[in-house]
Image 1 (cartoon, helix red, strand yellow):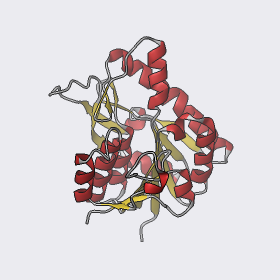
Image 2 (tube, rainbow, N blue to C red):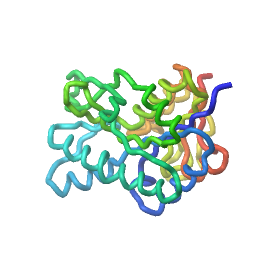
Image 3 (cartoon, helix red, strand yellow):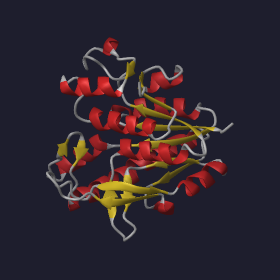
Length: 259
């Protein structure tokens, strides 16, 4: 029987606010067995961009990244946010190590071709160095991965953190029983985003398309669900969208299922 690996992607207000992040890290530290934390940090990047007079632009929940924006997201994601998380986990007795896709050649990506939208320095993942992750996990380390990748030719790229979590889960599911958890401030996917009691317990691909058509699912939730279903189709066993409380309460949230 394969060992379990839990991959948690944390974003939204959970990673941006000190109290909620501390709570999440406590819940994360209690998870038994192998684990990886992937994080975002978009709100902090937006605030810094505004202070520097740069406009933040997104299309369908994905950030457009010009050269100046790439500098900002690299500083924020790989620096401030990543190291705050690593320090928080170390304080809880977890031997965490902060990484980007460039470290250990962890995640290779290619700059997204210009089509209807020019996303700039956004990377589409081409390869994951699962051997390096296996070695880190075997040593007792807990990888904390920032959403910065590289192209193998010296160019850093901004890559959606949900996509990174999904691709890591797929790469590791050949050696582990992987459960992928997308964690943010809501209890799951909501029928009404202002009503926490309107959580949808289970979503299939058919329901996903319906929710998009009706505008119930929009913005950053679209790539999150798309990446979750892509992971399921490629062998990941469990995909759940929840909040920190849902992690500590047996993965209570919205579960994605193929049928």
